[in-house]
Amino acid sequence: MCRNIRTLHNFEPQATSDEVNAAALQYVRKIAGTTKPSQANQEAFDTAVDEIAHVTQHLLDALVTNAPPKNREVEAEKRRARYAARA
Image (cartoon, rainbow, N blue to C red; front, side, top):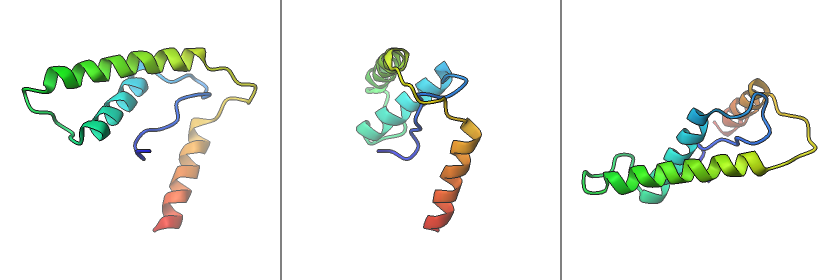
């Protein structure tokens, strides 16, 4: 999975629409193999981002868990520690 796509489920507060759109954009960039599509592909690229963000939001709204919500700061610190261990 693309390292730039973060888990969005089970956080307090819930993921924002900006976070959902950013994840959708990263996914489409990864699949398309480009960070900036050509003018000929821009509409298809933008449509894909919008549709994936829409479906992602539906998924997040439908998921249920009994686990306590995660803390964003704690999860960020875990990511930094994993990165430091790789270096």
